[in-house]
Length: 363
Image 1: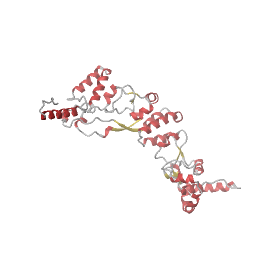
Image 2 (image 1 turned 135 degrees about the vertical axis):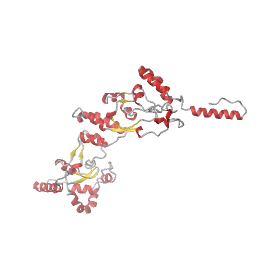
Image 3 (image 1 turned 90 degrees about the vertical axis):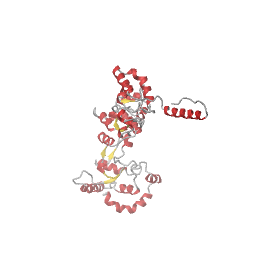
Image 4 (image 1 turned 180 degrees about the vertical axis):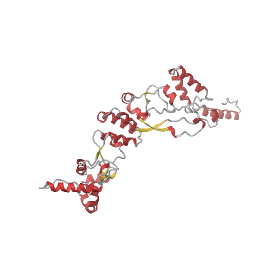
């Protein structure tokens, strides 16, 4: 087997490596894919155990090949393994756990971080025949949609990766989907972080008893871990590229696709392929966590502006509820610079008094 022959071949590996083209040696030293470096020793071992036709009697080569695989099979009796450990993109792995990736899955290779694959450099290093030999005996697994989605579910993707995954899936879905539920399964498997951007804390001198129900964040408590949630494409109901835009100072909703994902794809694409409708002010007002926004100087002006611009789009009942909510606020800053302006005015008044002038009236 490969394992038992390793010691005998180690001594020859250095000399054999000298016969590998220089550019290939460089690739071995700096593999393009950091998790799949095939060493010179690996190359020698794989070449040594690639059986070709014998001449003049082809039966000799076939007997050697059969004996080679039979020896490995005897080691794996009663196990769900082949008994043969060979190099993969994740290091030495049993062949039963190594996957072949062909069209249309090749576009998803960059996202299969933890899946053992046939090394990408196998063909360049002249060892692809060994993996072909395994393939002909069904000793490698072919990647299918079920396994792909399983691997997706184990990850939390960056927003830029989600854009690429969606684009790949849209271009390949006619070759991927075999039943109506596959699209839903795909959306559930692609997960990412949604940052709700909880409102900043309000003035520390406010008493918690003064707060309306649901306003605990305004009392100066630290935002909970809920300000960043892990969501899937399936959880999304809206996209942020409609006429209503949320200022960055204000929180979004849990079911609105992050702007970093939505913007590269475009509103028409999101509507056509993901069926995401534009977020409206009504939906945002009902579902966003705006509890602390009305008292926070950095948020309140933006909240008031949105309310003034969109209040007429609410139903009479929703309008009254929104106005009632705002009336309960003890103080709503109209500009983020109010505190700084008052402080400057007080300093100016103090300077004027020291100079003998009447000064201006302070805040």
